[in-house]
Length: 369
Image (cartoon, rainbow, N blue to C red; front, side, top):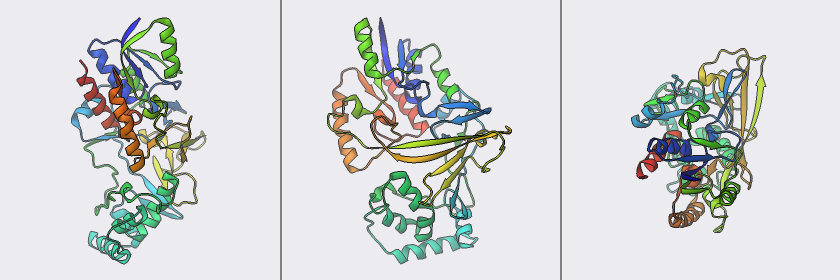
């Protein structure tokens, strides 16, 4: 048996690529080590609510082509991401905007907010920040940093802001309008019915095998005489090469899901961030609010950042100088691999928003004959 493409990973990247190659008349088989398709955008219905099992996913883009593409597979609602942040007994709007500054300092006008921030920046007075703490203080001042950045960032990365490189925060989006919309993109929403249904439509008519590890599958295919024209690998690029140059760093996440059948509304918002370091989780997600749910119960998920160890799910590449150098070495190896493509955030060691995943997958598919 022969397939034109073996696609390793049934997440968004692999599924878009498989769908496009099927349109070109190519035969594809998709495998995934998990027991389901859709990767990290997988949603599961619980208490009548589409639960984002691997963290909140809000689709947003300014790329009209990508928006029109994804709308072939789902109808999107009008959800706008407007998270709030809790610091001790204080509640703030995100992103940092006039609602944030008004709550923090009791001011009302953009001029007052800018003056307050500029005063705090000048008090700090560092021209060349050497770490993330100095960078944040030089961009936003003491209050915003200490209440809304420091604790959250240290939990996310698992180390002190003084130990993190300054380039992680290249800029801080300070908005001097009363606008709580987190994204500036033209198109935004949540697919009605959840993300899993999108991937199932993308993979319609394509052979898919879950609970299937890549190397075990290759060995089984070798014994059965099954061959492939090309492989698209969306797993960890360093794992593909058996870590021969060393392991790349990742950050992982742990999720604590709680079903509350007797509670119709737990926190009043889809996403609430907890920015003080003493609280071990970074945010609580209440899933029903993504689709304006009116179910009698609710489901919440606490999100805990975690160090990554082999066997854990890698969520975020650590794109510091050391890891970027190592990735470039792996990339050079990848370019020598005959008939193997590497895609997605793990195959390309890059954090992608969903719209960028689709755009890059489409570009890769278009490049294939």
